[in-house]
Image (cartoon, rainbow, N blue to C red; front, side):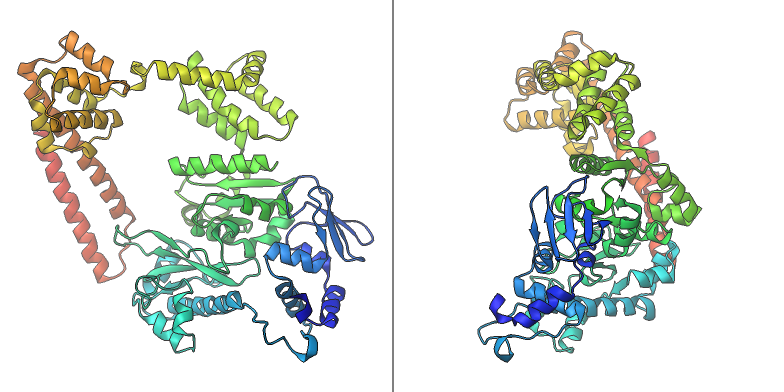
Length: 601
């Protein structure tokens, strides 16, 4: 490949390109003398700079991973380009004319320009989506939605937000009219694989996804409330030649300079979170794109934030907490300091911005807590730390965090913090940490050997109702005629229902078969206790089961009603169709209220 481009062009690229400027787009470089620049290596995560750039001799070398070369090789490695593509990219950026040997590229050289063509396509499509949002009646609902969420016109234009028309055939017709071939469009990722004339995104608020250079390489689409609940709330483009989810961060092109200056970054859960942070002046926020934080993401930002802080701003639900833990673990393994933002007063940054303004959101970011404090609080709530067993389990889980730390001083400090928070002797905590693997094995063995331990079972009204059936097994047929397994919220109740159902289907709904089927579930002791102590009587069992049926149905109605009330509360009436839909929601609520009243009689 190298022979296709003239040596004159190669020399011009090497001599004209400022290697410090190119490398500085991937990591922070600081001068230590004339022509002598140092920073954290962009090829491997590190906290202490070992990456050297000589601006006079125009080469780089990492004393950690031993990566080295000139500016062309650097661009090849970082952008994953061929030799020719790297030269062409640098030449284009510097305004250097590209000359090939013998006056032109050889006939057998067919340059792969798929990425460039795709970017051109996505740039044009993004412009059309933006036009539909800002200038057409079709995009009015989407524009009103984001305006009511507090986004300014300046922000909308900065992120080039758009609207994908509801007509799924429009985009294909439009692009064919712009001389894009049908075959090229079918492979572009913009259209359905099964129905190639149908666009992948329709009737959605569109978020262009930019690469680090600010070029549109993919899209994210959000349904516009109120929407059909069967629709996926968010859709993202799949991996494409110009776009890899694991290597891309939403908003990074806008945030990278601020990240470099502040040596800080905020990782968010969604695109709207990023946009809200940026509008509030916190312009170092980014988000992953439908994936958890990856090694590739950390590699992108580690050179900018080494010695600084990684802020995590994820939801407080179970999935958000799991994502927070995984991100903490990954960042700490790369020796990055982590703080957790615990948002208050709204479900996300956009809501807080709308309710309380940018200053409030800034204060909450400034009040972020260290990840160690966050995790200690989390395990303190998860386990009964007023008991020795609970303290042991909490400590063992916190040890997983300490294992990720790269400094012995940090580990020592966190062990002391753990001892102080749970009122333990530091010496005992350190001993358990040194023997943590054996302690985990003991806990696991103890749990396996005590599967029937009553503390592991949630004995609520649902489970008690199912255990009562052992007093009159015929009542299970009454129960199953009104309820099914999924109607129960308690997983232990669902488990026992399934055991009854399996026994019934086998024609073996008897106490011995039920007890045998319960082995290993932790339920055996409850059933045998109820039987031996005659907790439930056959003559009262029918009435007890009817009460259980009403209880479970009422709980299910309450759940549905709560979700419906939330939809009604959040509903925004804009059009006549909105009013009709609101009336339908109110009618559904009235029907649920009637059903609930009937069950209380």
